[in-house]
Amino acid sequence: MKAVPTYWIALLSGAALTLAFAPFEWRIISLLSPAVLFYLLQQAHTTRQHLFLSYSFAVGMFGTGASWIFYSMYFFAHAHFLLAGGLTLLFVLFIALLFLPLGFLTSRFQACSCSLTAKLLLFYPASWVLVEWFRGWFLTGFPWLYLGHTHIDNSLANIAAITGSLGVSYLSALLSGVLVVLILGSPKSRVYALLLSVFILAGSYFLGQIRWTQPTGKPVRVSLLQGNIPQEKKWQPEMLQPTLDLYQQLTNENWDADLIIWPETAIPGYFRDHLDEVILPLQARSRETQTDILIGGFYYNEAGIPGSENSILAITPEQRSIYSKQHLVPFSEYIPFLKYLRWLDQWIMLPYDSVKKGSGPTTLRIAGITAQMSVCYEDAYGNETIRGLPEATMLINVSNDGWFTGSIEPAQHMEIARMRSIETGRYLLRGTNIGISAIVNEKGQITATAPAYTTTVIKGSAQPFSGATPYVRMGNWLIISLLSLVVLAPVFIRLTFHGHNPRNHRRNS
Image (cartoon, rainbow, N blue to C red; front, side, top):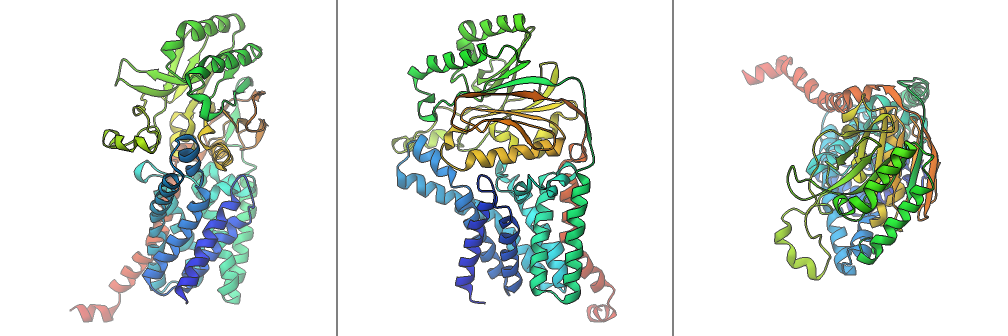
């Protein structure tokens, strides 16, 4: 195997995988791209080659799929072009390191006496998913570009109600393994691979006929306000009043709804600073119309650790309550060792202070339902979304993807959020500043939306659901436990056979 050209193939294959995700949605690449990597890994002979192939693939994947990080630093943090590009490159090179365990594990399988079919249909796909899970956990996690997200619109996604998106990733990687078996395998193994793929496709289709959750209560009439305030103007002092006026105007046009949702940080400041002129008048009108309101802004938690919390304020006729974001984004909402990095202010705009982590329940009582809340990036974590379930009958997320205006990030983010509906069997209401805002049903299908970068209101109804999917009850533990056993199986087998081999006993005696 000629190493250098092969690494370039792995790099380009990883880069191409981004085309399988939104907004491109060339879904077939989700099968072809990993298949190329599996083929290259199967042809590799040393651990070093396995590691370099995995790393090259990951650099290509994150280099294209996470390119939107550059947008936030260059266009909105006002970093110099070279600095923004350099920091983005460093991030890509670092996050790609988390793909190295895939190379290590596949090299171990190469050294064992496992059959080609077992490697490609069991061990390689299992290793892929364990690496995805680790990446979504390590250092608070980066659960982006999960292979399973590319199947949000086909039957493979149905298994997410049992295993979460990681299970969808496994089926996708397994089908990639099938493609390689069809090239490298024996006639018998090719037949087995084809039968397995038919079983997977048929089984996932029939899983979609199972209703894990049931409608409860009456539908909620919803209005999602998409203000489309440009990110570069959002925090300018002179934009504060026009922003408030816009959202109040849109609200006044939608008092016929049961629930009105403003996006993340729709109020670009503290709630307490706008109590008299915005919040109290809205609550008074809420009493007249029996319409509840959710507003994104900042909360100063005087009862706890002082500081800003990225929060959602729930306004009902009877009370006001708060949910504050609990999973913060490092180097965005908070910067570790910020006081030691102030010297970078001359080249890049750093935040004045770190956002504080919220605490307490993750649900709010609103519009007659209990809703599981999330702010922005939190909807990327399936294991965190289920914390308030099965009590919560609906999911609500507010976001501001304005930091990534013009990039592929908003479409990717919407794709990820939709998977949460399938996992939980719940409607998702997702209101964002620039888009993509949408009402998503319990099957992950968008029932109402509007183009991004438009000032508009998305209107529709959302049905509350009760009950619990298997994923709500077991989270990621089921799929991770099973795949861990798959990966460890060759070790157990080798130890078992080694321990019962008389020749080995004589050698050790």
